[in-house]
Structures are given as structure tokens and as C-alpha cells.
Image (cartoon, rainbow, N blue to C red; front, side, top):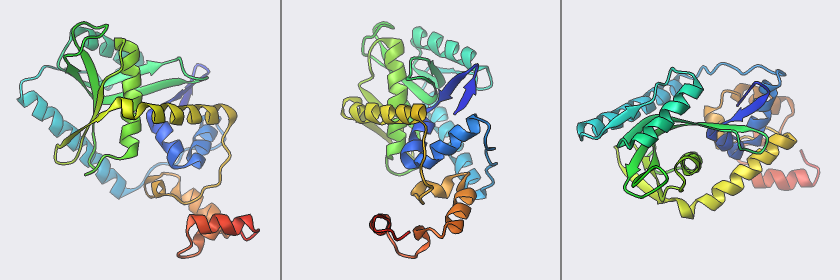
Length: 256
């Protein structure tokens, strides 16, 4: 999330972050307003996971090239607008696979959406592009498809639908071990639209949320800040074995 020329620019990762933890979105907006500085991520384990994720992505790209498919690689170090134009040209060319596709959409509710898809795969389904269209693929190290991956792919599918004149029929996740899982977009798009609307309204109205501990804390750059706040507040989450539902019930009775 960042602001450029007065326009707030958000990404599918920001949407996923909001669903994991609204307080994360509150902090991201504070960074955009210049109220706080984003901490540097210094987590060796996270760095290893990121490196393994890139290796997994490259291995899948190598596998595709070995099969003889034509691949158009978008320049990742080019300016955003140039990357978007390269993506649009690659879509029109009908190449088999587009690697590192870039999207930029200013039709959002008071904000613009930017996104970078690992892969777009050609399918022989007619669209505005011609006798073919594209479906998004993302590589993930996980052994199972996670909701965060689904939401990101739904966002890429929405952008593809805007550019090619029809929504993809499926989205695809290439899991660890190169197992490819396909999901029907029609079964997921309603949830994605609802989640996206909630996020956009929250960003527009402002977010005020306590930093309750969640699973995402394990990989969050703000973890130390939130841990310190909960400690200073003597928060109920510090009680061993106390569930979030039990905390909620106690707080409702004035026990904080």
C-alpha cells in the first residue's frame, strides 16, 4: 500500500492482510500518512521461506520451458506502466504463458489496484483477444491451497476479465512438489467480491482495531510493536491457554 500522485494504491496482498488482521491495515494506512515508519523485516526464517518460494517459482518456469511452451517474461525491473503495457501486448500476442504479468486498475472505490501474477496460462476459450484467453497461476510452497492464495488469484482473474472481456473459468495454484490444483472461479468470486468491498470500505472510512494476536503475527514485520503494546496493556491474550472467544466473553463483562 502506498500513495502516488495523490492516489492510494493497494494490492491483493493488502486485501489478504486486512482479512488476517485489520490492525495491519491500520498501520499500513498510518505509514501512507507519514505517521509511522514501516519497520525493516529482520526474520531469517522468513527470508529463507521467501528464497525457497522464488526457487519454486523458477523451477516451475524451467519446467514450462522444457515442455516447449512459448513464454513472454515481463521485465520486473521496469517502471509499472511499462510492465503493464508489456503485459497487455503479451496478452494480445497469444503467447502460451506470460511470466510476471502486471496489472494496474484505477476503477476501485477511491483507490487503485496493482497486482503481479506469477503466470498467466493460455487456454483455448474465445475472448476479446481472439480464439483464446488466459487464466492465472500462482506458485506456492504450501502443500494445500490456502485462502490467501485463492484471494490473490481471484484478484488477478478480475483484472484478466477486464482486459480480455471475459472472466477466466478457473484459477490455478502450483503447490510444493509442482502439483497443480485448479479451482472454478464461479465458486469463489462472490466471496472475493464481498471481501474486496469490505476492504475498500474500511480503507475509505479508516480502520481502528486492536492488535489481537493472530496466525499472521508469525510472519508480520510489526510483530514486536504489537507484542509490546499487548504487554503494556496487560492484555488478556497473555493468559496461557485463554482462547479468543473466552477473551471476548470476559471483555464483555468488563474483565480486560
